[in-house]
Image (cartoon, rainbow, N blue to C red):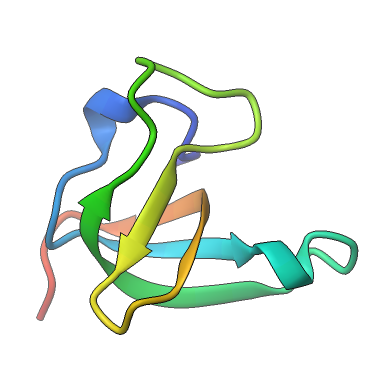
Length: 68
């Protein structure tokens, strides 16, 4: 699933994000959503989130609905 709709993203979700520094390469980082930073219902480049480890990026893919 892609991460362009805010309604699909919840805290505790395991996601793949692209960090600002990795936007040119498209390298993805896996992590668990802590906060949702985008206020609009959707964003063409992905919803911006903060992971539990503090990294911030845009969701490219939702891995699953629950953290393990």
